[in-house]
Amino acid sequence: MDGDFRTEFVREPAALKHHPALVLNADYRPLSYYPLSLWPWQDAVKAVYLDRVDIVAEYDDIVRSPSTEIRIPSVIVLKDYVKPQRRVAFTRFNLFLRDEFRCQYCGSKGDLTFDHVVPRARGGITSWENVVAACSPCNLRKGSKSLRRSGLSLRRQPRAPQAEQLRNLGRKFPPNHLHESWLDFLYWDAELEA
Image 1 (cartoon, rainbow, N blue to C red):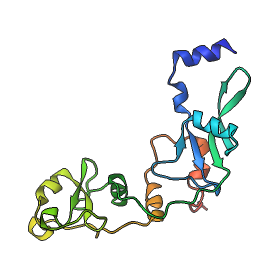
Image 2 (cartoon, rainbow, N blue to C red):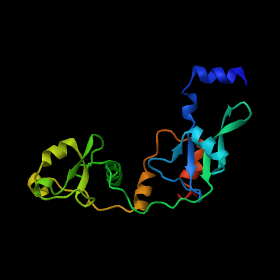
Image 3 (cartoon, helix red, strand yellow):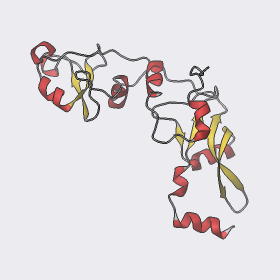
């Protein structure tokens, strides 16, 4: 084993953590856009050896074992198609994604919580049609009052999102780091510039 390689990662043990692999479904679309479907390099290498994925692109860096040497995969594609979920789970994250990480009363970003449009104290239920993202000041202002009594109005009526709608919304929020080898696969169905 090459001593320089080993000591490089001993000195910087986190160095290999920065080599995630973009995971594509068998149709070459990401499994998810937000959060982006990424696997740690170790899982990607394991999937290659188990013959579950094909490597589409690689990093320049190499990992070695006593008997094998492999370039770290940067884009992998599943050999078997995984059918996307049709049902969207009602979670805080999906709610914020549906509302594009904006308060549904004032439109501000950041410091989000969620609010029941019809307050629970007045019989409102926790559902897609009655819960919206709200900033803390608007949520405090509304309290357990009706929209009319609070003086607030909704930017859009809340409703249950379709799975495809959430996937498309997720494309608007790319992660902080996009490796150049991923770009051709993330926006492959976007209209090309003339």
